[in-house]
Picture 1 (cartoon, helix red, strand yellow):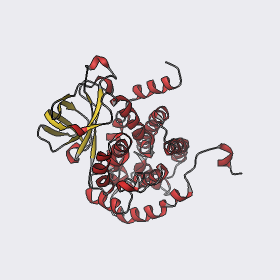
Picture 2 (cartoon, one colour; picture 1 turned 180 degrees about the vertical axis):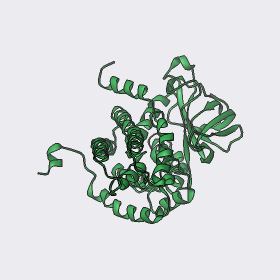
Picture 3 (spheres, helix red, strand yellow; picture 1 turned 90 degrees about the vertical axis):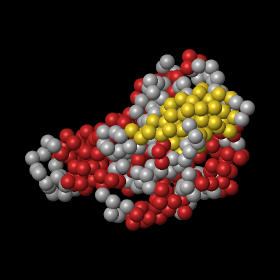
Picture 4 (cartoon, helix red, strand yellow; picture 1 turned 120 degrees about the horizontal axis):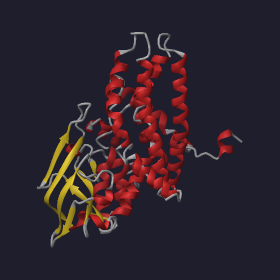
Length: 385
């Protein structure tokens, strides 16, 4: 019996692990000439041509049923793909949300017509989605959303505002959490989800430039946007249950471990050189790896739960909270190491990558839920509150 078996750890099945060699070969060629400080923007990297190339290889919607254009594979297959995409710093921002959570949400709660319409172009890398959750003055308190969809004789009339909407200016659709009855004091009651075509009259998208100079966050305004009846996804008033299930997809995968991995790899390459190797650097590398390894094992275990049709909301919150801590540790600790050295022979590309990751790292503990919200969920899951 292997050590892995004796510990009863989840493992990626051999048929899914076999994907890795093919994906690495493709990415080695595709990313060969892309500098590290650009690859570090993997999450926000908008490249429709790259998304089309992945779709042609069957690497988008790989967990969707084949009748909707998907691969009919398990969540483990997607885990392997995402892990490799992030390790190479591939530009996944265009298709990212559609593949990760919007598609699975439609698959779980959508009508047959919605599945047939939305899922095949996601799998082909032709249709991009964004998430309409956060609102001004609401922080991470999703239950306080005020954007409202009012029933009309033709469908729904949507008015309100969303903020921090990643890549909205490049996306075709948004799945928005809105209030269809009651008011903000009703909290979880009266919330629903609607699919919004971002080309409709009354939709205004304004990119927000961040500290790093990127503009992937956006404000989105809805001014009496007219939606058809079939814009509603799932049951009216069931939005809170649906959005919670959606967030489990967002919080549980490798993307909650590897946001800083391109920087870490660049730094490791420097530490392996004679001028870069120091006892302190070797100890730091061990510290980071010793935190990443068990978190990856936990992420694989959550993936196993997803393959069984479970919704590991609390476990996903735990991975997201702990993973964010490591992701933010990496740039801070590497900066301490590099700037404590006397040498001036630090590679410029490493410093450029460090500069970018340091600027964006504070956002890691905001996206997908703040630490306070996540720890509240974990505490409730453990029966502590």
